Image 1: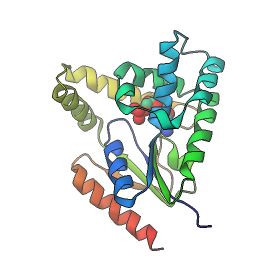
Image 2: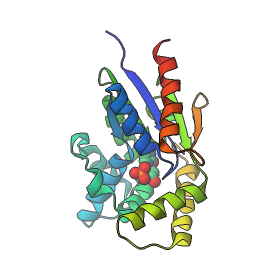
Image 3: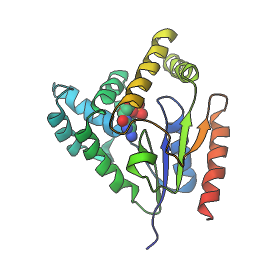
Image 4: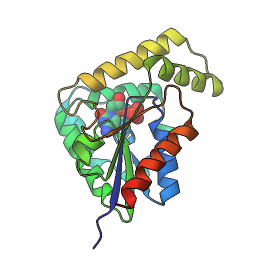
Length: 212
Ligand code: DC
């Protein structure tokens, strides 16, 4: 039996890894899992049930119930849900439950693209390709800001920027599985790169790994 080809994509919020991951999965005919949605779904389930976000036992029971097949990006996109997700993501037993489900997903043949914060370091340390997609906080806040306006909303750039910085701090500063590039990850800084250029750069790295 051939082992599935796993591509791990990590990076901070709004670096462009979601779009890139979907494009890569489509180009190679691989399965795709946005692992942020698993944290978001857990957070939403707690919020919907009126349960506290700071009770690890309750949160980890919710995490164990999450069905990866029914994650809806649209429904989970809400800013409040992202904030709540970032808070429960610091809890080790929540992470254990979700990582277990993510690792099972990664085994789907012929291959899978997983994106998140700890894929190359914790979830799939043996991934054939690891990418760390980043961009400066100013650029990421600018993208988020433009996206809100494009969707007909209103926003204050300084507030969006402060939010991006706060999220980085929480994701990079937590004790369990902090966001950081794996030692063998390829760095892709998209600050001055469009999505097409980022895709071409990623494709060159993946193609080289496929023929190995
Ligand atoms: O990528 P996102 O904004 O949907 O992620 C929401 C939160 O989930 C993020 O702030 C941190 C957490 N997360 C995580 O801790 N590990 C992952 N692999 C993915 C997301």
